[in-house]
Every structure is written in structure tokens, then in C-alpha cells.
Length: 285
Image (cartoon, rainbow, N blue to C red):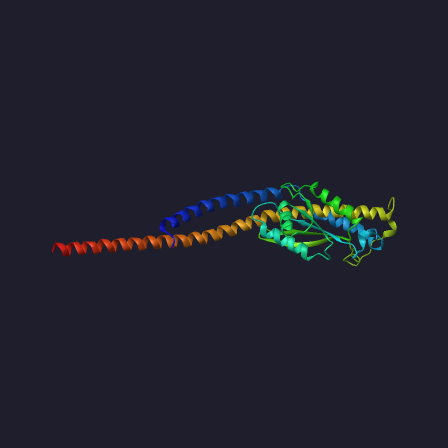
């Protein structure tokens, strides 16, 4: 049975731990709010590029960016975090990526040292890249985009990305998104049809659409990096909030046990004193 001194020591430790968790939670909240005020991607930009595909009649272009090559391996980008308290989220992201593989020849491209360590433990081969910094700026996805786009022209038949999609502070969703091949829609959602006869493309439609796709992939990765960083902050906040709740429950149980033991010890002491007084009175009489 745990001693009274150990119970008191545990209560003091939990109190100190609770203070540390509160500091970490406040820091994470400040980082989250500060990040939201930084330069963010404009979702309208991606939509405008997608409209270009329809204007140029991209679905009629026989370019590798627009049709599947199932005989070739895919590149699967996995965005993990090197921050603390996110081991569970990293595990979900990696498992989602592994489940999405179409063959054992698919190449894993992992961002973050902790994700790389996880894959090493699984004996999986991968191409490592640094994790997303606190800035998550436009330049960060460039290295990854250069690698996967260059590989798509030589050896990849598809590009996928597994990332934590930010929905709200309390909700992050693991998503696997196909970047390439870009499979265009059959037409505008409103049923209208753009007049392509008036569109002039130089030097050639093939090259213009190819450049548009590469720009879209780069910008889409920028959006994904941004959402992933928001999810990272939010997941850490919620993990710390959960830790606060669990620690509060544990401390409450320890306090109950501690005071129960103190009262039991007090009752025992009182009974012993009373018994000693009775015995002393009988001896005197």
C-alpha cells in the first residue's frame, strides 16, 4: 500500500505538472493565433487555375499530367510534425499513406524527422525532407514540388499527399489527396460552356497547360503546408487540454485518497489516546 508521504509527494508533483501543462497550452494558443495572422494562401487562386484547365480544354490534351499511368509507381508525400504531443497524429498520417499505396514500389516522401523515425522502425524506405517550419512560407513547398514534379516526368505515375486537414480548433482530419494526374471535370458546374475559340495560347497549348498544372501543384502544396501547420498547433492544444482534464481527475482521486488516509490515521490516533486514558484511569482506581 502506498504510504501517506508518497501520496503527498504525488499531489505536489501533479500540481507542478499541471502548472507546466498550463504554460505549454498558453504558449500553443499564442502560436496558433499568431500563425493565423501570417500570410495565408488565397483559395481563389487555385480555383482560377482550375478554371484555366477548362478554358484551355485540358481534358483533351494527351499529357501525362492528365491521365493515369497505373503501371508506374506513385509518390506519396507524408507531412508529419516534429513537435511534441503529436505522436498519435503522426501515426495516423503514416498509416493512411501506407494504406493508400497501390504497390510496394510506391515511393514514400516524408516531411519531418519523427515521421522518418517511425518509417525506419517499420523498415520502410523513404525520401526525407525537413518538417514544416513555424513560418510555413511560399518557398518551403518548392523543394518538395521540384522533387515530385521532376520524378513524375521520369518515373512516377501519380502524386499523393497525406496531411492533417485543419477543420477547426477541435477538429483535424487526416486526408490523402491526389495531386497528379490532374483529372479535369467534365465541364462547369452551372452547365455553361466557355468559348475556347477566342483563347490564344503561346507558344503552344500543350506547354501552357503544363505550366498551369505545375503552378497549381506548387500552390496546392503551399495550401496543404498551411493547413498542416494549423492542424499541428490545434492538435497540440487539444492534446494538452486533454492532459489537463486527465491530470485534474487523477489529482482529485489522489486528494480523496490522501485525506481519507489522514482522517483514518487521525481516528486511529484518537482511539489509541482514548483507550490509553481509560486504561490509565482503571489503573489509578
